[in-house]
Length: 308
Image 1 (cartoon, rainbow, N blue to C red):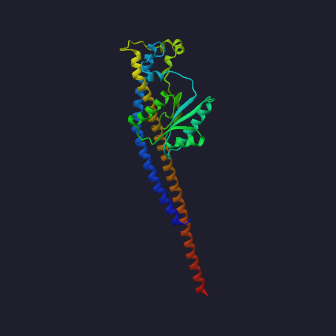
Image 2 (image 1 turned 180 degrees about the vertical axis):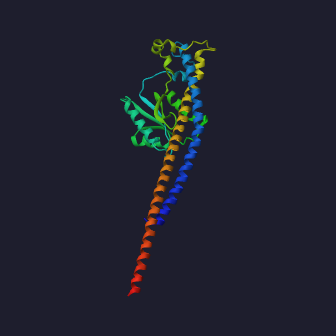
Image 3 (image 1 turned 60 degrees about the vertical axis):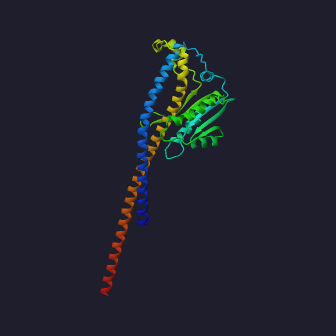
């Protein structure tokens, strides 16, 4: 390879390294902001789940007698013929194995389910999920995109309203959230959470669990006005919290994956630059050596001519 070609490759790779490094820094900033939001919101979800568990136990684990028909339908099981899945994916690449592991996890989950005589209906967020369903022939009820890098609750409420409506109007008989769950550091894993119906929000409301571990029994509270009315107000908030929490976790995991991928790309670019510089110096040394040899050979030839 000519020296000028090596020099051009070095310059081009250096520019690429600057771009990937800048993208890594941008993703890191987004992660720092989203991580605080996701952790704070998870505290809220945990407290909300704990409160609802106590209310369920106060009702002696019996289905609450809600006055609103649409709220009542959110807690009752019905025969499952249509399975709804809200699949949260990305709109673009450059996120390393994020999309691959997500779609592989979705395939594995579907294989593990008993889908005989059942219909899968997807609600996709992101073009990656849309392509996934198209390639496998799955039905898409609604397509949503794009999701902002820092989702707001107002943005999430649009999805929440439509997902809840789909279940209440019996478009689906059960509804799941499928997304990348952020763990810690740069770790994330795919998971599927049941969103509707909300039958039990905690294992502590299961009669068998309560009988087996008396210490797990939450205290019984006197509720004003009634436990049913309080639950009737908390149930929509619980559904909203789960959807919004899923969006925050998915985006946090995505930015972590993007940050890691860009760091790896930057490191690889620097390694390539070092290799190209070494090759450039070797080629330059060979060229200089050849030029010296040509000069010496020419000088020797002139001396022979003079001796003649």
